[in-house]
Image (cartoon, rainbow, N blue to C red; front, side, top):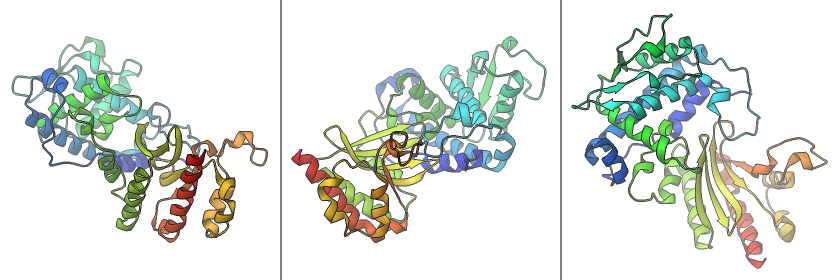
Length: 351
């Protein structure tokens, strides 16, 4: 079943990186680029996060109006491609990033002064204006053009002044996060702008445990404690924790050498789940027979491309691994999950 734009808005609100009271040190490339004090940047990023939460709330309330895409993602797809499935938010993202990236903070840091390069030239005038009106509903004030005038040449607009009367500091936060997205994004840490991932602008690398705790914070306390226990257990067994965030898909994986063993997933289409990529099941088949039926069925499904398996013959998401939903039901089988992972690691090490 297709996830709607309202579903996406709710999910993005969930994965917004939480506010922090930490006076984290900021990479000098950002303080040099903005000529701002670290405290001003930290305050601005916090204000930008609040703005994004407001934007997602507005998008949730009005999502049915803007949910125009007819294309449905594959049911097992973890990444979310905005340009294909949610073009309105894709256009919003482009305009917001360009306002932040190209806009120049005025002397008092109360406004961003922009040119016509903030518009998405691949979209019609009507679609650009639709985005600006939506942003106006979210609290942005846009001076220098009439966003309600349907027929106009956007190329003729020379100067636009963007303000945010509710909290002008937000403009500083939007600018620093736009710079981070545009100039310093990485292949394994994408979409920092719409997640307001302040960790991308920190001087020091953020510990994986910190990211894990942020990621699973919406789960029940008992499930969180179970995941944190697994995290430490398999670090102690020599596995490496690696964080990848692509297309709003958060994947925290635990690897033995180059082999992904298991991981935590958060994605729009598949929710929160444990992901397992076993390769040594035949080595401990007798132990699996003692597992609860629900876990045996997951294991029996097998891991691998469904297209290449005669009994399936189509894409079933098998290449992503086996899924264990991360709800309270996982607590009933947590000891067996631990036994399973222990066996997998043991036989990987024997190899």
